[in-house]
Image 1 (cartoon, helix red, strand yellow):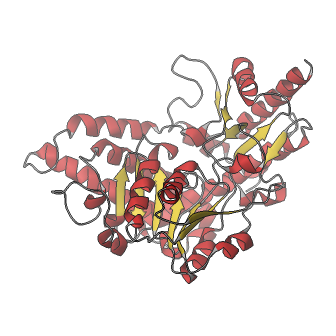
Image 2 (cartoon, rainbow, N blue to C red; image 1 turned 90 degrees about the vertical axis):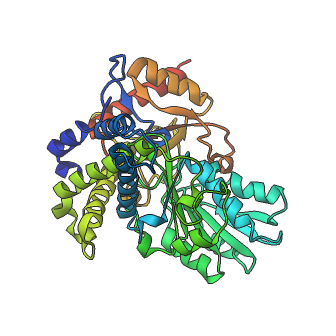
Length: 437
């Protein structure tokens, strides 16, 4: 796919699937580039959530039609996530309040196997949702230490050789992000998990920032656990965890005594919210719709797949290719707007090489030296209607750069090249504004 090959008719059809795509509830026109903090929400996901909450409100377990539909909605939601991840069974899909809560629950269950001598290996660009659970085990003396694999500050790419050097016979868990939520750097997950299995470590994948951008195939990687958030995938609040079924059966998480002793129910605290499952099913329906439209364009990526998993693989493969075009435009610009790489007073953290955009997602982290990130964000909003964010993103990555905050502009596949151009023009003028003071 090249800039000239972008199908504007398809992009228009995609954007019609999303609520508030061009303007907020007050009618203000804006360009939304804060998708890493919570993505656009699909209209059909909103409608499915509302219907499930209203029509299937009784709890499961009674004989009414409403209760049976509640149970069916939950089951269909698990199957949808199963197909999206190409997981072996819907019984491997656990729901939870958030990715953070699921990772804490998982760390507690795994801690029962620790003696205080083990270590956990992770990376220096992790979100703290995938750091704090393991750091808490270290603070409590349940494990000996958490080890951090470095990344290259020049391009944001993980130093796999350094990570490999941290692994030893005492490594019990390797917990990594599939994509950095700060810099958009893609992690070579499959290769790292192969290394982890050589030392018999559990493998945990924080896929929160991965699943909106990259196809995931659990049957092609040695992944024991995977966690993602629905609200980063065009849905509502709530999260899901995949776990290898034998591990879900064997491990002992926090649970209420009378609740089932089999997965996924034994891992879920309290009554399930059927509207979460209805909403995520609607997202998968949307991606299936998209996959049907683009499957001939990504035929090289979907051989060997069948059924809904094939169509979903097509959708995510197309999304990944299209988002590379957005990344290229952000970096090199257009005829009207200079790219971020050409703005001398903008420091980009992460990969900047246009020829290597396949190694990143369209998430851009940057600063303007001597200007507070929040001032940049406020000016972009006030004058140009651009929604970005200035903070630490709960990411350890900024520590490598010696910064406490930065600006992040994050795109997804329903953003457009025109929006990128408008952002670049606004950013250029914003830099001039502050440098002129």
